[in-house]
Image (cartoon, rainbow, N blue to C red; front, side, top):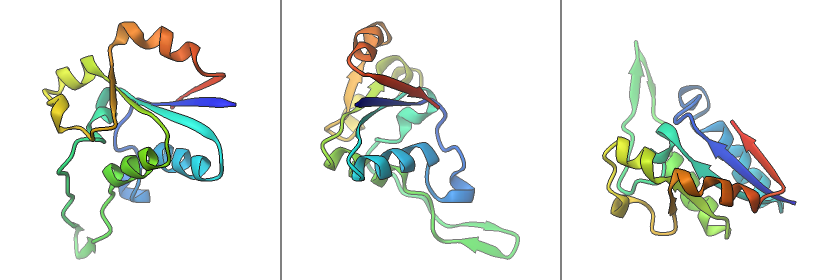
Length: 126
């Protein structure tokens, strides 16, 4: 069964979990053999931008050194042969240069979404 996970909210639960829960479960399911792709829209289009790093953050006297690395999760997802799509209009709204994305990410316009969605048996929108 071919699945598409749509991720609309970027950096959801990244302080508590040190990863994006939807990207993490998608990667785990893909590693277990599921045929799954990702569509990034809204603030999640920032995930595949190259050159990101997250410095440790301090809460009072506690320092969190295991920063979320969602970019690396997206890269791992791509290396498994899955597709990752980013919505062009959401990239443009955030002034993200398309050339700064991981090379394998496919940019798709909103008007192309119905055709893309038709290619999947199930679409999960998180």
